[in-house]
Image (cartoon, rainbow, N blue to C red; front, side, top):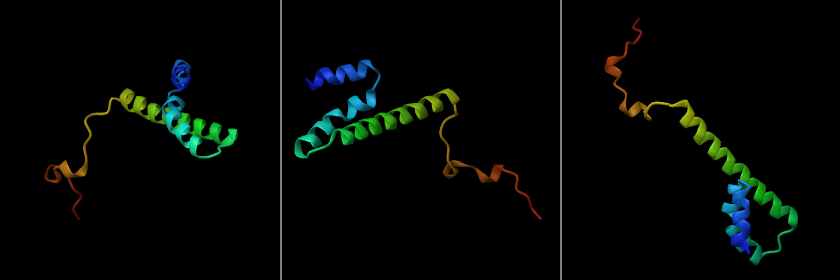
Length: 83
């Protein structure tokens, strides 16, 4: 049943919920989760997944050049203000 349910969640583009489903099922077997707790966990997982996907899309859309940090910066080539 849960494989079918996961497929339905993915069909509805609820990938975060589908991803956390097995963990939530295992957790539920060992404790009594009220329906509100189930829904809160599913919604939190979906929100987190959508935020991650949104940031990844925005980073791709921004077309930033390769990642650079200060460790590779050549300070001898920069102009400094000297007083």
